[in-house]
Length: 188
Image (cartoon, rainbow, N blue to C red; front, side, top):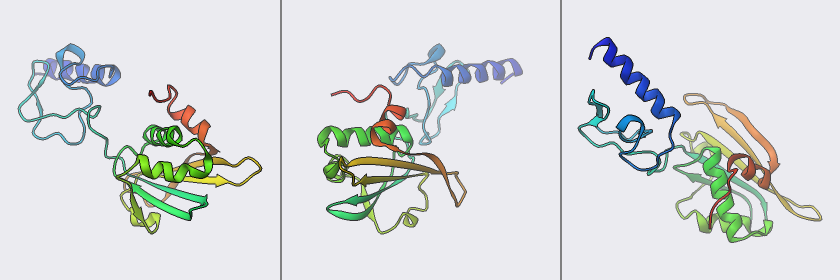
């Protein structure tokens, strides 16, 4: 590929990353094909003519992202402390979506943990957050026992390759967390 061809390819890739408006495989900027290929690209390569050639390329908007997270629930009547591990969509927007789904099923704070478990059947119970050495995010959801019980969330992020957890946000109310990271809410 010539210098000019390489520059054009880089420009198209940047445009594709900036304008990720399409959610259909095969659509993109300048007919480039899937936007935002996920980590699971097998033998996909640039063809030089504005598309991917050979192999398969899965778009991350169709497949869950492999961002692992640990969710810790404390203060709930049925279980004092519960740790759950989820293999994908652990970034704050994914967590906000999960929380909103659980709230839609059971809006009462006392029953939030049971609703979360029923809406997340792939959640794996673990004994402690340290068991999930590959988790990138960690959430603490706490039932605060007041005259009017409410839910509070805190989030930490581990930089890939690091050992320490860095505060990402919180503590804040669950409703504030959902509004912050899922501004459009969820549709019925």
